[in-house]
Amino acid sequence: MKVAVLGAGAIGAYVGAALHRAGADVHLIARGPHLAAMRQHGVQVLSPRGDFTAHPHATDDPAEVGPVDYVFLGLKANSYAACGPLIEPLLHDTTAVVAAQNGIPWWYFHRHGGPHDGHRVESVDPDGAVSAVLAPERAVGCVVYAATELEGPGVVRHLEGTRFSIGEPDRSVSRRCLALSEAIQAGGLKCPVEPDLRNDIWLKLLGNISFNPISALARATMRQMCLHGGTRRVIEIMMTETLSVAEALGCKVGVSIERRLAGAEKVGDHRTSTLQDLERGKPLELDVLLSAVVELADITGVDVPTLRTVHAISDLLALRSAA
Image (cartoon, rainbow, N blue to C red; front, side, top):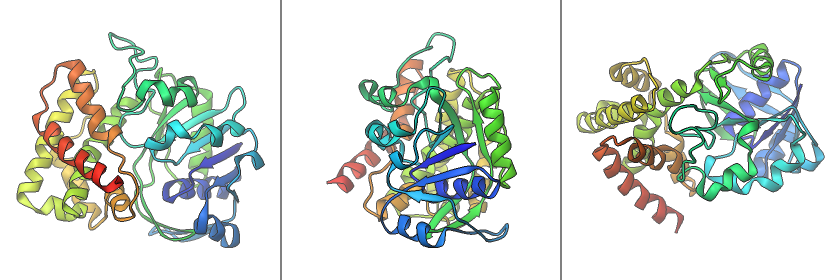
C-alpha cells in the first residue's frame, strides 16, 4: 500500500508514522523546519501509550512521490481549494482521498439520498472550488478522535485517543475502506469502517462547533471552558441547536450532551486547534464548523439563534486575525 500524507502536521505525521510502522510505503509531504527535522530524525511520537520513532520518506515535492493508492489529507479544510498543484501528481485513476477534517466535508451530500442529494454546501465548497480539485468520487470520509500537538519540529505529542473512523459517502463498506482500516490498525490505531460516517461527523462536530470558536474567543482550554458555569451553559445550548440540525438531516448522534461535556473536561488543559491557529497567526478553520451548520439550518428550517450569534462574533475574530 502506497500512501501520501499531504500536510503532515501533528495528525498527519502521527498517522503516517503508524502506517509506516505497520509496513506501508508512506510519504510525508510537509515544509520548513518540520520537514527538515523529519528528514533528519524521523517522526518522533511521544505518547502515553509508548513513545516511538518512524522514518518514512519526507519531502516538499509531491512529484517526487508520484501516484499513490491513498492520499491522507492533513491540510486544513480552508486550503483544499488551493491544493490542486500539490495533489495532482499523487493521483491515478483509483486514488482515494482520505479527508481527515473537522466539520462538514465538501462531499457531505454526495450520494446522500433524499431531498438534498447532490446539494453543494456553499460555506465549505464555494462555487464548487473544492469539488473541482477533490472529486467527491475519490472521497473517503475520516473523523479523527485523537488529540495531538506538534511539540517541536518533527515531534508529535499524542495526548489521547487513537480512533480514526472512516466511511464511504454512499454508506457502502468498500474494499478500499477495509484495506485502509486494516493497515491503520496494524500500526496500532483504531480504524472502524462506519456504514454511515455522517453520524460520526455530527458527533465530532458537536464538540468542535462549540469548543473551537469559544476557545479562541476566550483563549481558554477544554477544561477551563467546561468548569466555567456561564460558558458551559452556552456550549450546552450550541450543542442542542446542532443536534436539531443533525436530526433534521436524518442523523442520530447517540451520545448525550452531558456525556460529551464530561469527555471534553476529561481531556484537560488541551488547546483546541482553532486556539492554536489563532496563537500562531494562522487562518481560523470556522467555515466548515459554524458557517456550514448555520447554512444547513437555513435549508432545513431549524432555528439556531445561539449558533448564529457565536458565528457572527467568531467570524469577526477570523477576519481581524487574518488582517
